[in-house]
Length: 327
Image 1 (tube, rainbow, N blue to C red):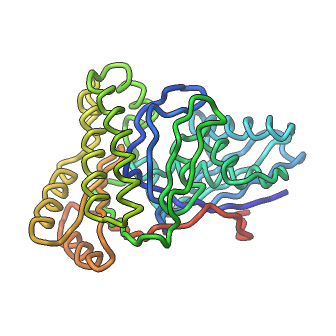
Image 2 (tube, rainbow, N blue to C red; image 1 turned 180 degrees about the horizontal axis):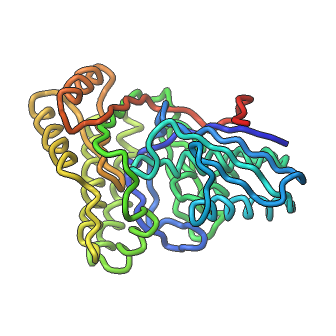
């Protein structure tokens, strides 16, 4: 049965950077994100006896090698659960740059998991889908849900899953993304995390701080305290990038334009234009702000030559099935 799903990307406010278990994709610390409306993956999966091998097409390109293997590994996991040996055709499209620090793997594997499980007739709840999706791309478990989403670290596979802390309508904040580079990064997040855990002397301190930051930001979300949310998210971001920079060899995902925008956000805040930055494993800067400041921040970013594109996102909803098939 051919099934299609869409899933939104997310941006972590409390970061995930490192696995406690590489095989099960268990994170070293629980973490939290907001789901981003308008940055999505759209994926059609068809399991059929007509196919002799798995076929994977992403953004108009037939995948081979490592990229295909990651998708096939996820299909194998789902096939094993469903007790199926059918091969599949997978076609997926992102409406934003892939592998540039904007969580394309999160939305991609969430959409893949929802579509593939439906295609094999599996009637699963969102918790079960998040457990399966996590094993393809850790942060994808958070993209199963909309709103403010926590990924519980757990100690075994069934204990590590996403939970919705608050839905997308609970507290309206905006993420204005300054895209300064759209090229694929040289060191993937997966490879970078492994090196950081192995070589960074700061790593354990960051994990401890992240757990503390998580408790604080959940309280701030409950109280709808934007200033506190922003301060904690910015601090947690800098902690993660400090461990990346202190990795051997150093992982510096930022570009000169990244640092320029960081400094501008700090200046804007001093002027009274309240905004905070957070950055995933890439050069592009996510600027968190309130709805009334969104247009002014977009306007100011348009005046910066280094900014190649701007995406402005509300908090988005759950991953879902759709009838708009890609083939």
